[in-house]
Length: 74
Image (spheres, rainbow, N blue to C red):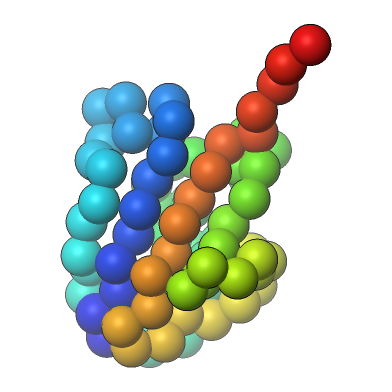
């Protein structure tokens, strides 16, 4: 199945901004995060088609997965 992955902020460093991937049916958000070598603790928000999601959510054909890091400030 075809899924678009968008990375934000420093997750783009040495990776990509937007990429289309052909993933196996049943692939979860967590599987994608792990495959990108992104620490689950560093991930702040994941969204599928502009809606918040969890690591256990299974992706579907033509989904757009956006991954944002934890943002600190003061």
